[in-house]
Image 1 (cartoon, rainbow, N blue to C red):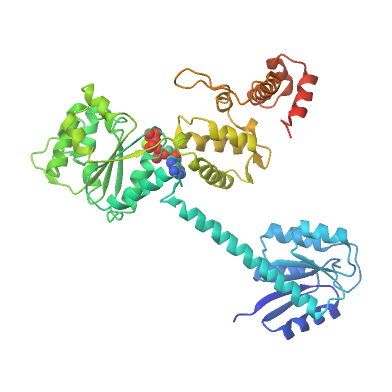
Image 2: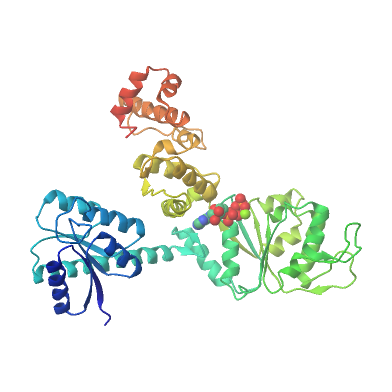
Length: 470
Ligand SMILES: Nc1ncnc2c1ncn2[C@@H]1O[C@H](COP(=O)(O)OP(=O)(O)OP(=O)(O)O)[C@@H](O)[C@H]1O
Ligand SMILES: [Mg+2]
């Protein structure tokens, strides 16, 4: 068993050697000694200690006299800044509650009053190790939870998405064309990538092309390549994306935008497994799996004569439909946590912990027309704006609140409120109008009062009454 390393920082020689002896006797511990803060810090920077025992009053000269200067609090502060993450236990001649509170706040894990007995020290070390173990287990557990709900970076726990993960897993290795549909921002590309990167093709390229993003006259040579001189600008021959994706996956995004002329050519590739570069007489065999995506209703495009029926049937063999976010609310919370973590890292030094209950209510009841992409943007924006540890109502964009106003469902009927009391409903309405006004004016209360057409003192009073602005 490797010995645990313990650093003792104390200006009194007797204490250092006493504690050093205790540790030797305990077995399994290896003491290092420092006389003052600077020595201790230098040692701690260059070695990995499991525990650091630090005297409260540290005389810079290390001669046992109570100096004018440094305390364990200075040590804790500097240790934190340097990224030292040993268990720090503070010792002091007097048991003072204030001091104990102060050092614990600064990150000390324990506090011992001198004179320290062998048993006390042993107990303190064991307790710190127990805590450390629990902490590590907790971190590990959290990671496992995260992995459980993540499949190739797709965060989801809803039964609908679990079913999709199941389908992806089942069909990933076949060459069958897969069509992924769903509203904008639902994660069609993410699922398509998961299909490729979990398949036997994962070491070959995943090539994505946006069929709506390239002018029609260029798209053909982009997909199939061309030979030198095939057209005016073709000064040299060029490999197409099908060839680039050889052995791998070609992701045809926005397949509904593919011009009719190219639909015929794509159909031929799917049937013959070969392509013909523009201006070429030969054909080239290709082994490429096609994954197509669309946010549009392809069936409807077929009816409108904008999409070939034969191609439609050819690519519609296996369709993965990603439901909109509003139909899988279980995923919203998980995604919020995920994006908070993500943007805490991006927007340093943000340490946002979560979402306030009323903001969460808005996030859960909003319709999310832009789906996960919109949710991600909202969380990123909130992290930039917020001045609190939790995201507040006013950190959310205005259009999110407004959907909280009385809603009219498809049938045009307004849902009946829980109570018809004008007093209670009036208060709710006031609360909502005030938060909207505050968010619209970025918290400027004078301007908000003007929008609300009430006086500033009245607004301040109401804010306090409703607890709107902590
Ligand atoms: N389940 C999810 N977990 C984590 N991130 C997600 C999830 N779904 C979508 N996203 C993120 O949302 C954004 C949009 O996803 P993606 O581009 O795959 O959507 P899309 O359906 O292709 O959208 P569009 O139709 O607009 O092209 C991306 O940044 C993606 O990483
Ligand atoms: Mg996309």
